[in-house]
Structure formats: structure tokens, C-alpha cells
Image (cartoon, rainbow, N blue to C red; front, side, top):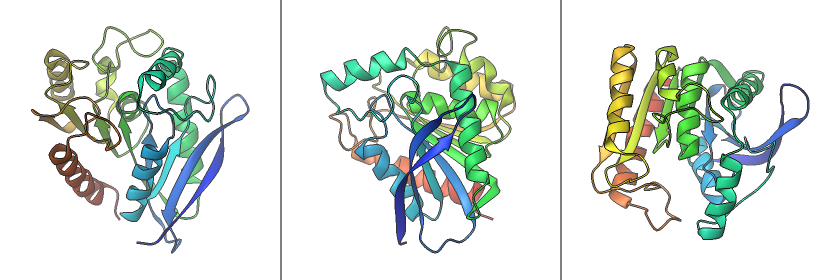
Length: 247
């Protein structure tokens, strides 16, 4: 499918704006939309590539820059310097601000003539995977996909406050979570805590743990890229969004 891409500015609560990358089918038809939540490395080449891949599947895809308060427009490489810089910005995130940014991005998408306002979903990677889970809990997205979302079942949510997993009963749509069995940053007990919370809340969900995959397994620019797991996760994502985001 032929697509077009552009850099956009999204007005945010309290004034100012949040940058982002938009990718959409060129035909301009009314479609479901997907928010693409970045890792700690910003809306970099990998996130832009994922956003474009989703657009080629027939969705309006928006990757918002939720580092806009502390590091607007940053793009880091997958090296030690990039990790160190991204971690500094990660510690500045606050759950209430992340939720506000998501509401603003969803509202911006719903105002577009090419978006079906009832068919909005999200996907995220690493802290973006956490963001996708949080957004599923606190907004009315109908579908969410979380890739190796770190800290979801941690002792506290971003910036302190309640653990994100404790918000699970707020999920009104469906959620899919992908994890790597070799990911030391997300221990098995945290995955099981997420699984139990979703089941207890009666949330429609699927959790997939790839035994041979590590953190970041979906990103082909990282040393931990694991092609078989990435390929299967993409298949599941495509099928999930086709079922939930197409009229």
C-alpha cells in the first residue's frame, strides 16, 4: 500500500505542543488508527520504520514524542551513550503526564477526517510497551499491543504512585503482551503478575513469551534482535489489529 509520511505537532494540555511522526495510506480513506509508542531512544529510525509498516497495513499511524517536556526531538542510537541519555529522560516521566499526552494524541487523531474515531489502538516498545499498557488502562483504545513493557508490574508506576499493573481493571478493550524469556529486565514473576491481574479483571488478553528472545527482540537495529520471535509477533499484531481496528 502506498503511504505518505510527515512530521506533525500535536497541541497538548496546558499549552504547547508535542512533536510526532505521522504515516498514513495515500488514498485518504477513513481508517482505524494506531499510536506507536517509542522506546527510550526517541522517535528514531526504528520507530519511524514501525510506524510506516503499520500504515502500509492500512492504518493511520502516529508516533508521538512523549519526551517533549524533557528532551523534545531526541533520537538516540542503540549504544551505551544512547542508553545512558535515554535512561535520564525515562526517569523524568510521570504517569499522569503520559496519560494526558495519550488523551491529547487520541483527540488529535479523532479530529482527522481519515480516522474512524471508534477504531483507535496502540502499540509500544520497552517503556513504550509500558505506555501502551498504561494507555489501555486509562483511555478508551480498543486494542493495545505491549512489546517487552518494562516496569508494568514494578513497585510503582512512572514517577511514583500506584503500580501500573494495579490499573488493569480499567482496560476496556483487548491487549496483547509480548515478552522475551531471556529478558532479565522483566522477570518471570512480573509477567505472571500481569497475567494474573488481567485474568482477575476479566480483560480480554493474550500474553506470549518467546523462550529464546531477549529484551528488544523486535528491533532489527539491536544486538538482541531475534528474527523468529519478531516475525511471529508481527504476524500476531497484524491479525490482532485486523480483527479489532477494521470496520
